[in-house]
Image (cartoon, rainbow, N blue to C red; front, side, top):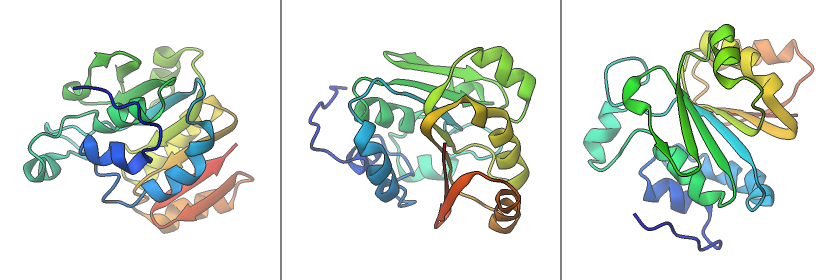
Length: 190
């Protein structure tokens, strides 16, 4: 596949090109607004949940049935093109999501387990972390607790598909984090 380096394209172009579900979820509006200023920087981005089409939680089998050319890791590829100078990382618990490409590296472990996070990510820190993994309030909160310290100052932590909004809202109300909800997308600015 030829990489398109036309910087005039918005992020939704890459989401659609790689058949991610992020465009259908309408997350591109906020991503454009917040990420465009750092688009050409040498950023590091980590996404949790890479879109397995195998068995297990949060599988994308239905999405694959509607989009035959979809592959796990679609959003990592979209972010790689959107951030031409970025390093893109991914975490998932399903082996079918593991791959390595130029400027993309994936890890097989559970982000809800702090020891696994620390052992696999070592000293890595990120400008952007996107949690699109376990869509339960417990999983989203645990992943946040394990990974938020890895967000660089002035970076972003996004939680997509906030499934049990009330429980997640209650959690963040008890904290001092700088956060906002936008539909089913939670944004925490460091």
